[in-house]
Image (cartoon, rainbow, N blue to C red; front, side):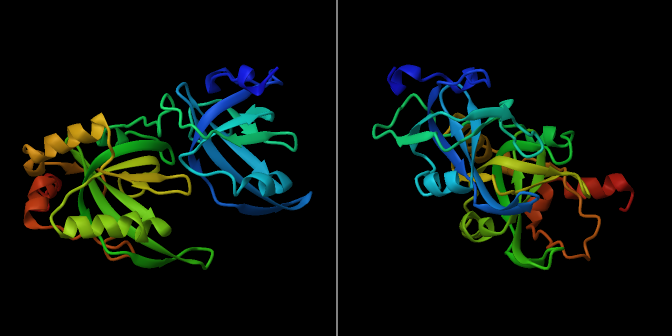
Length: 293
């Protein structure tokens, strides 16, 4: 049987199938991570796959990683066959699939030269910012909003002694809420710098966040992780709706922040806002409600 004849939807994959193939687009590619356990040293990387029916994560170890790491490119469509299906660990895997593919020595990955228009470039499950307020700590979500403020990037020393970059920005949407998004590492100098230049020039872009991590320390906020993806001015109905809302008056509507900084004197870099932004986000109203004014 030809491999093309064995193609099934991602949603149909299960551990009891042995001769399967999927045709899917790579939507995210992780870095190589090294580990040490009782079996010795090793290395691993994962990548996310999407077809018109669902998503799944694939993982490669050691020699299999050496075969496939350079082949895999985000945005490309591949024909993938053979491998084992194991339960996905939800604390490390945000995709809506109970299984995960482990590629093996007999696995094959072939680039499809013809782009399949039936396979979307990305899949989102956007949640309004108002819902993030009740989201569980450390949960992984997709969110989309208008960037209203961007801080400069600052250097932060992690607990392990390694230095990294951090940049904080604000998002607002039609739900009447705004939230802080913290960019870490390379995100600060790639998308972060681009966003700062846009906002500084008076352009308030739409930002879609794929796989952001919810943090409930001092109010709810979102942070980037290794599998996070950022899309500036995404071409989608959700982004177009936000743009129209913002340009037709949403810019001047009040948004209450769900993020609270209980340690303004600490290392967290402060968000600088204009008077109009303070009015937009109802910050004065929040102070009044606490009885401080």
